[in-house]
Length: 348
Ligand SMILES: [Zn+2]
Image (cartoon, rainbow, N blue to C red; front, top):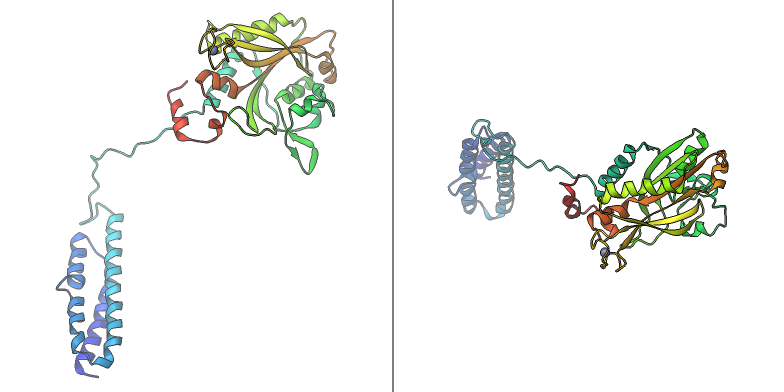
C-alpha cells in the first residue's frame, strides 16, 4: 500500500470520528461544519479530487469509503439543522417571534339537533314537564306489546327495526314511547314527562328518512285530562318554538296507542299559509302525532283507566330542525360536514 493511501486512510478515520461526534451549538457552528466538510472547497471535495492519485485497482474501494463519509457528513448536517429548529431561542437558534399572531383556537358549534332538542326541552319544562330517559335497546314488551302492538299487529311493519341476534326479544327502540311505558309502570301519578332520545328504524337512507333519528315524546296523565288540554299544550309549544303568528290544525289519524288520535300541522313558516313548494301549496306542514292515551295502555301498566286519562304526543327532532332552519336533506345531520355545521355557530 502506498504511503498516500496509509496516510489518507488514517485521516479519513479521524474525519469520521469528528463528523459522528458533531452536535451544533448554534447556526454558526452548523454553517462552519457545512463549509469545512461539504463546501465547494471542503474536505470531501478535496478527497474526491485525490481519487486520481489512487492506483486503479484500489479506486473502487476508495470511492466506497469516500461516499460513506460524504453520506455521514450530510446526515449529520441535516440532524444538526433539525436539532436547531427544535429548540428555537437557544444560542444561535432561531428566536421565537412573540409578536406573530397566535394560531386561531377553533371553537366548535353545537349540533343543530342538540340546539333544537334543548329548545324543545326548555319549552316544556316551563309548563311543568320533567325529563325521563330509558334504554336504547328495549325488550318487545316495552317497545311494542305494552303499546297495543301485539305480535302480528300491522303497525309493527311500519316500525321495522334492528333486532339483537343473540336475544330476538330485544330490539333497538323504534320510538321513545317505551320510556313512557317504563314511567307508567312505576305507577306514580300524576305523570307529566317528556322523553327525548335516539330511535331506530330499518329504513332506506334518503333525504327524508334515516335508520336512526331523534324524538321527543310527551305524556300527561292525571284525573280529568282532556283533548282540550292536549290542544292547548301543543299550541303553546308551537308558538314558543315557531313564533306567535303560527297557527295549528289537527287532522284525525290512527295510532295503536292513542284514541282518538290526530296529526298536527302548523301554518307554513315560509309562505305563512299562502302555499309554496315546502308546504306543497297547502299552506300547512305536518309536525307531530298525538292523541288521548288508549285506556288499554293504562291498564297494561296498572293504571285505573276509569279514574285517569291522559294525552301523549311525539315529534321527530330532525323534522322540527329541518323546518326551523330550512334544511332540505336529513342526511346532512350525520355526515359531519364542517361546512354545514359551521352555519350554526351563532345559533342559540
Ligand atoms: Zn308554504
